[in-house]
Image (cartoon, rainbow, N blue to C red):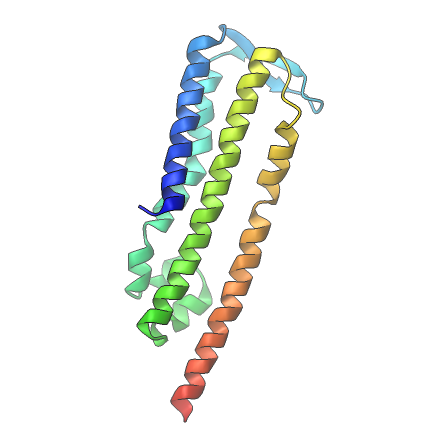
Length: 178
């Protein structure tokens, strides 16, 4: 297992442990919704804490499954990645270049997944602290903002990787023409 994938698994474990701890230690009636200023404005049962890890686990698990398909992409079944350059041109590259691009692609997915899961863990902690105190911690909104902006570096990385891929493909094309 690669390091980012291991981080995701550890963070998912922490999310579940934190949520179960919250369920076992919080009173039956807890804040379940907070207004824009972070103050509790709705109350409900602590069963909510058992739904939290379920919802925060879906995206990381899907990304872990996608990342586990790295070997299939190297064998030429890149169509499922939905990247036209990979779909049409990947098998034309020499094996070492093909492996470099596929690994870069999946490492980027793994890094994004680790960051998202870290944000989900921080949200879990914030909701736990908020349920205990009746208001969310000051840093909670910053985590939400980080979570919302997290795809931007990933998309920039994908754009740069695509440009790199096209350059390598054109270089290969010029080599075959001569």
